[in-house]
Amino acid sequence: MRTSHSQKIMNDLHLEPIFSRLSEDEFLRIKRHLYLREYKKGQVLFYEGDHRDRVYYLYSGLIRLEKNDPSANFSYIDYVKHNTFFPYGGLFTDDDYSYTAYAATDIEIFYISSKIFEEVVLGNKQQLLYIYKNLSRVLSYHEIRIRNTTTPSATERIVQALAIWMEDLGEENEDGTITIPYPLTIIELAKMSGTTRETTGTVVKSLKEDKLINYEKKLFTYLDVEHFHEYLT
Image (cartoon, rainbow, N blue to C red; front, side, top):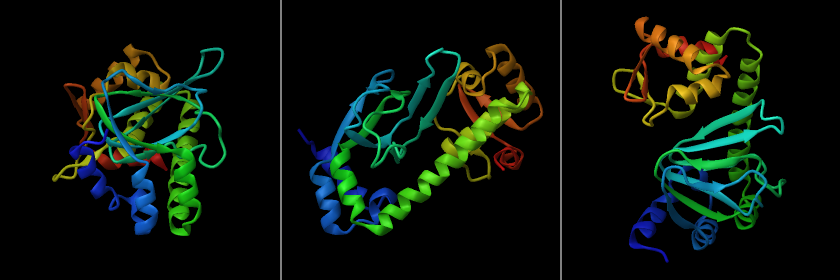
């Protein structure tokens, strides 16, 4: 059942970048098959290997993506913030999801049939170009993360993971600093950077002492934004 709340949100979605290049008729077709659902923190949207029958638009909250190799020695972790479409990877090609998606906070999320979304997008060159540019951006950060895993310095891996979080999840404040508006733990940062909790905690403490970041109540604020931008080139 669609509520007045979901209908109100849907009426504004055409202004969002992922939908703004669609014609009125194209968006109406999307809208007829678009549904809003709420998940509590910790609930699973889909598991790695599940049939990729839906694509999503996260309206509010944070989602964690995770993939483990068969040996369990490697773990891929990523996050999706509010007002973001996903997954870009696998569009038009994959039959199954390549990772598991969890609600990292309470979330509100739209979903639509992958088949319908892909059919509409294939008929719109501007929309295809937008998706291609975003996929290229995702791939560029994956390249940075792969480079990060080969860096022998644990400190550099942690700082680079923080830089990626800043770019992907951060929101700029009036004073030019950037804050991630979602609670993220030292343990999550350790997993992201492939280090121990103890080492990660020590590095975060040092970054705080050097006035590069602030970390209070599980919220990261980047005080020296340019310092972290250097790790994204």
